[in-house]
Amino acid sequence: MQYWLVKSEPDAFGIDDLAACKNATEHWDGVRNYQARNIMRDNMQVGDQVFFYHSACKTPGIVGIAEVVREGYPDHTARDPESKYYDPKASDEDPRWYMVNIQLRRKLGRLIPLSELKSHPALSDMALLKKGNRLSVMPVEERHWQTILNLE
Image 1 (tube, rainbow, N blue to C red):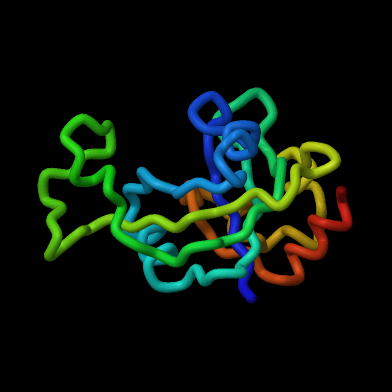
Image 2 (cartoon, rainbow, N blue to C red):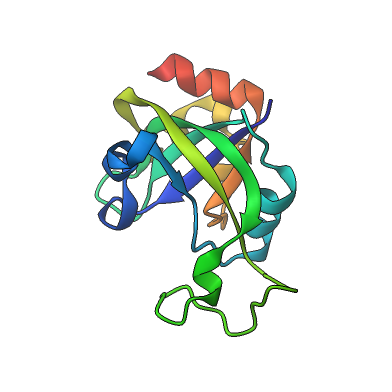
């Protein structure tokens, strides 16, 4: 099993939106960064655990845990001209963009804010906390995963 962190702006799609989906499951679409795309396409596997992170808000931080329930497949929004994620270069032969499905396992007992994560020495080398890392999908090392769970 692997561990991941996915970021979403709560006013666009937050943890409560995921909870409200049928079976608390939704596809993670609209990712338009090649490194994040490659992670979803090539690395995320059914059963992997995912931290759900609220970004671009008053108090960014980890708010829940989800699980990958469908491995990477072409992101249909790339081929929908009505979608804000439309990419005219995407095709059946070359879908360009991928997504996974995640299912909410639980909301955390409390939001674990970015400021707290930054202040914890055991997390100093976590991908999320590295300068300039703005990926919306990123790996989490097991030792970081366990440390964060202990903060809850």
